[in-house]
Length: 160
Image (cartoon, rainbow, N blue to C red; front, top):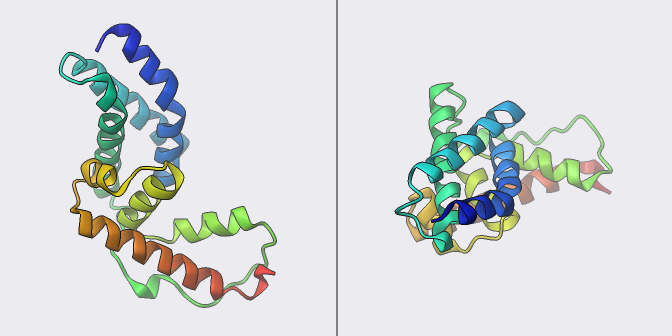
């Protein structure tokens, strides 16, 4: 990868990578650090990475960095159906806010694969490569994430 191709990669993918990191980490500074470190690693390996695979590479690096940071700071939540309570105190008329809250309640692995699929538009195979999960696991986590979001949204009386 040439320096021009690297700069093009930064221009094309930095915003999407930042949004992805921000959704997972919920911290602007951490998200910026992850984006910066992802592109730093891309630069260090630029001679071995083809331009066509650069997007997949930086999202893989970012995903791994986020999971490492979550584990390090003990923010990684274990999967639990009890996490979702059926009581809801506030009424929301803003669907975007409602979806954001539903996504925030998901375990990190489910949140990652769901955002990669529905928010960033990756295929199941690409998500498999980025996360290191099997294709079956990717499909299961996306299914479970969507199911939990559906249950959460249905449990809210004030969605109207």
